[in-house]
Length: 301
Image 1 (cartoon, rainbow, N blue to C red):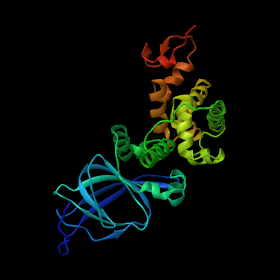
Image 2: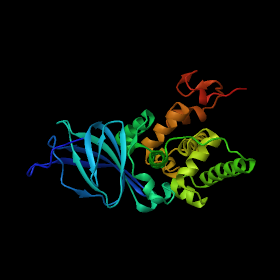
Image 3: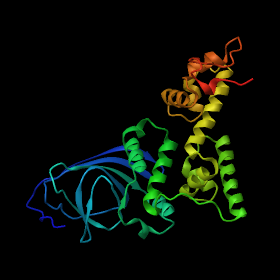
Image 4: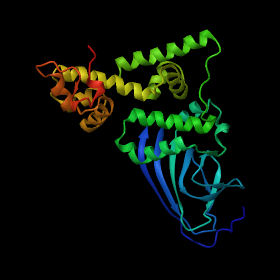
């Protein structure tokens, strides 16, 4: 994979924009336009970074070893690794970089940082998740963003394989106990972060996310949203007037975030559901947006 050496002082145009940040991570939209067939100056990595290539291609040289990266590639930068980049063409590249704290990287790698050094191919579902994370994270629920980041990083370290059925009854019992403990904590503290949720139960966030999904068929963030929407319905049925206050109480970023989540889960915005739930007449089988259009707002006698 021969690429010509760095020639003179050719300039590399780079940009990096933070699109999300959470407990132990920062997500950036990174773009690079460099002269073709020229290696960039050596640059030492300062931390743990998972890079997903979204578009374009380039050659990456780390400690003298060269690899080709394209839009089906993901790789880790690890502390101390000396990196150079060269583009085979003029199109440059676009990547999503997930910068990890040392603590979170250690937790997700089971205290084995050496496991996260090799590049991996990106399955299409991960590619879609990366696109949504990059373009919609600023409007998404922080808990959901955190869980998406943890699932992406964990899959890049260990592979995306699902948990198999537990071989022993006591393991199944432990899993169900972890899932129930998660539900109990969320019911009392819906604003808790995924990292804190795992810490309170002495497990890693990745293990918690995988076990919860195996036991319930839902991600933790999806379950949390359903729990919050049910609380919102109860408050709306009692005549709650301040949707901004309701959003704050339930841990939503703002009124718009509450409205989007409730509409996705219940089929109508909070104001329409409030009118339905506080109506003076029984309207079984009728949704907030018209007959038959909102199954979740119907009741079977």
